[in-house]
Image: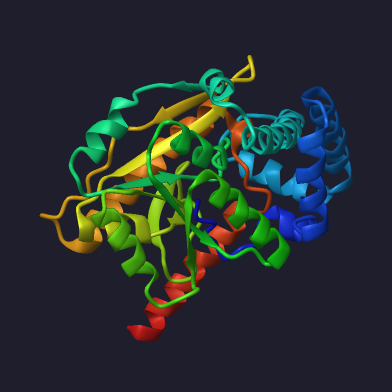
Length: 319
């Protein structure tokens, strides 16, 4: 799904999102027993929690908006749980790539599937929107397994080796990739796929440059990606929020939200803002329930404040 945002992900900041580390991770998970993979992930993330002080502090600062009454110690415990949840989600995603169909049947618990079916029945395509929450990477496996044609809108990874591995993973699933900034017709590619009644997946909770819309998120101003709601306005395709959450028994709960229909009777900017806010509110509700699944390993609110300052400066320059 689309990796939007002006701020690099924590992997880039920590210097671990490179071909060597990512390649070794994929190899080890594919050959080691699940329990061993989990144990190695637990150990690596326990070390990261203590040694990567800047990343851990960013997690704590981000979570303060979610749990404003929590003590610093309580927020640190949630931060530690976030590291561990992320490690398990990465392991489960990589293992799912080679799972038999019967194993995938047991892996997913799909609630409200009719929301997908009803949205696709309109014949206008479907814009699947999610955030950096839960196992969004597993969404490609889930969509393929349940028979939904899917294209993922993604930025190219900074490391070409990582980019190649991720692209091959999608290809192995029969999932298409539409890379942002690789050509001037990205929007046209998306519109064409929607016209074919396909599903296009995008991460919406990080903006990309000027491609942004202001929302209220945990009582604060934040900037989300504008493109999904704008595409919904132009094409008539509904936006369907979807979250995939690991349960205590190791299975994954698939939670599609109520489809968001961008009101084409409203002025465009207002319609886009309302649709983006509807998604922001849906994501906020899930984070309240499972804050350990919110994977923003950088100072999220600081980046939002910077975007607001940039927006204000831009308005002053054009005013």
